[in-house]
Length: 214
Image 1 (cartoon, rainbow, N blue to C red):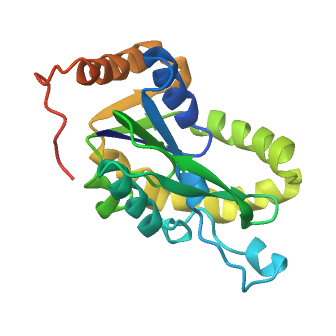
Image 2 (image 1 turned 180 degrees about the vertical axis):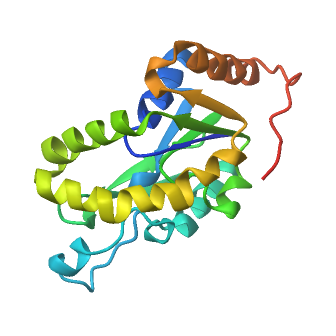
């Protein structure tokens, strides 16, 4: 199984790039995994306490579980990813996402390249590099419309955690990327290049080397 990791800052267009590649390849060939579903669960904390957690730090993500699920997929077994509710800052107690083995798995998230153990499982490492002003505007719209946030809370979170964590962890992880796609979903050439590499794998073409630095 070919595993592609797509990282980048908040609002960079990671999901758009992943979905564009999947659409190009056609249905049924790719298992899509969102790192957002793997935020750590903290049922012992109150909602007010969970609100104060720095969700932009790598430690907020349960990469151990994510790696366990990737290993299961590589061995031909299914896994059940948790579903994370950003309005309550907790995992769903009833719902999970079934992940089935496939030819290709694409995982996207802020810290896909930040964790050394996760990087070791990736065959192709991608970083989506988008201007900060575009990213923050996208985040404002998403957090207000999809996560019930206020403009003041989005502003405070961006200054207190999003921007510092991006500079400390996400931006430095770009050095591990095999492919950098500027402007995310707007970069049709970058998406086409990634899709062609993936299509070569599907057709059995191994003339390209997808094993690089970790």
